[in-house]
Length: 133
Image 1 (cartoon, rainbow, N blue to C red):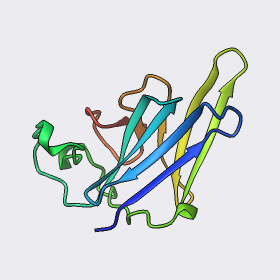
Image 2: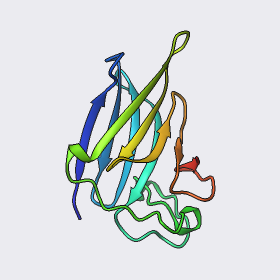
Image 3: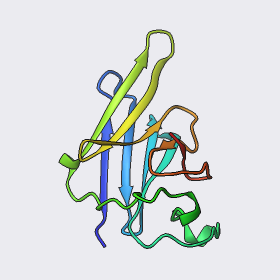
């Protein structure tokens, strides 16, 4: 199982950044405003998805269970920063609106300030780790 970590700063406001972290079990994306996490979303499981949800603190970060996953939710783990891209969207009035997460040029997830969790194309049921996109 491979691990991966990358921080990508917003192209129009360096105060915002996205962190993609794969610990060898599961991968998440986090939206930062300065040093504070203001949004997060599950990206993929590296380990086999559990059949049921067991949300115990010692199991953090959590694998997304099969009941929430689309049939094609299996993604090859990220191994190189060139495999990840963020698309940042801003509003004239509110600043940052959204960051779209792409893995190997395929749209995977979206995070907005305050979205805990964000949205994923790899889930078929809203859950605590990702909402249906």
